[in-house]
Image 1: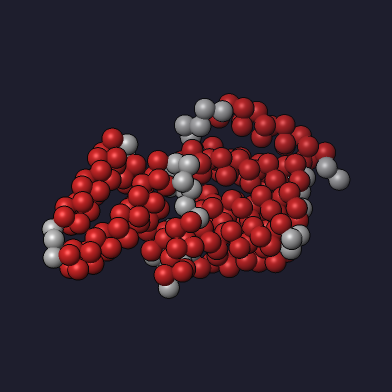
Image 2: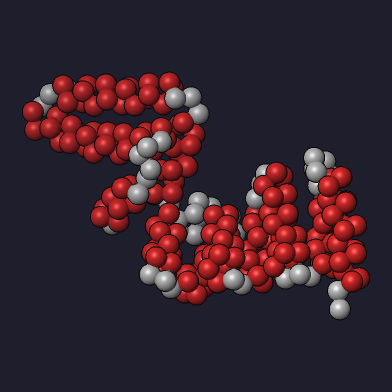
Length: 216
């Protein structure tokens, strides 16, 4: 169990402020445990005081970094909470990426689908499956599935709009299904009426009408 925990800690991105804070927390946790043992052996409060100063430094670092504490909490949760939680499993994604590196793209796609089915909040798996489907597998239907899931899961309207535009683009450019592309663009205008490129989307619908009726 400790080895698995340490493996997860090592995967935290130490180049970010929140990543560095995560490492500080885990280092201080280990140091505090050793200080407690030392204090018992020496019958002295000095090691406990030293540990307290260490935690004060960690707290000061978090305050100076502003919102880093909140983001680090999410990083720590991804380490300590088992897979199936609301936080995507970094190790799980890394294993699937390893499949892709070996050229096992079909197996990687199935693995991403399993992650998507198991975790309704894992947006990263949807994006990675969409990219894999479009770039490597050339599977438009699979890409549509992935980006529809991404649109449903994203809490940000701008990102939702981005996924919806990708879906419309797949119908238009990859499948050459101009009728469904028009349906998607109309859905975008209805669902995201404040989109800044609304006029361009309406013009595109008119262009697609011509292509749709000219198609054999």
